[in-house]
Length: 260
Image (cartoon, rainbow, N blue to C red; front, side, top):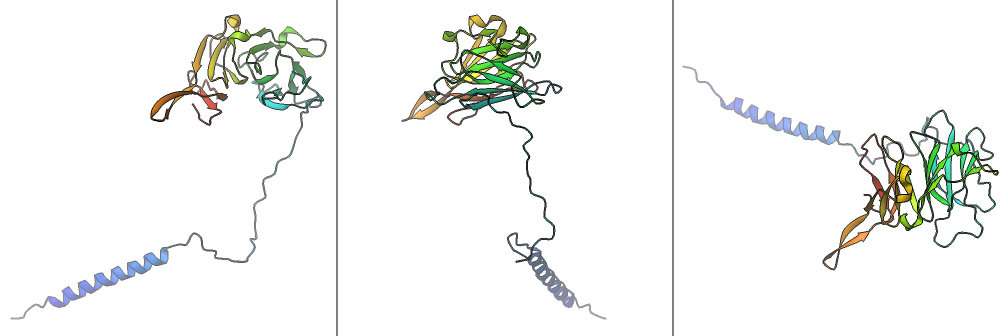
């Protein structure tokens, strides 16, 4: 009888596995790519993308002799109206130049040489915003902490400027300059919210401005000092509100660097 020899088959199988493993290691080494290797040293590229450049289309210059900082730019809510509102103020404490004008302006992009309308508040405007429901209404936040409402339909003064139709009572306003203000969603379209470095969010209703803010929220955060929890007031310097995202949520940036 013939005997079947199985050992050679076993040896061949073991050698095959070792060859496959060795080949796999070589392939993996060849597939490694050095991301920092410079393959073509000293050669100039044949095709380069054009550098991004910008072109100044128009410049709106403050017509006053005493130059001021632009503290807010607000686009007109209607796309057909090529207008923009700009607020001018000096935000540095006790560094306001003598006889500095308080007027802010609404510019028409079709005539950048001179402002279309002037806004004359009792205190320089630090911020302003057009109403989304009635673009003739403009709310402004002043350096002295008050809130004022302008109505373009009320007519102009002899110098081509309009004065506030309503101004909040100073004792019931912010204690610091109003850094930002926004119209908020509502049926009447007369409500807005403001923030200031006094550490408060204040809600206002144009229909009852003399009564003061309708609601108040203090911007505070708890900090640990020497093992004790101490509340600290955070000054608001910027505000963002989007009714489409959520009509009850507000995003506030503070002078301490926190975002609430």
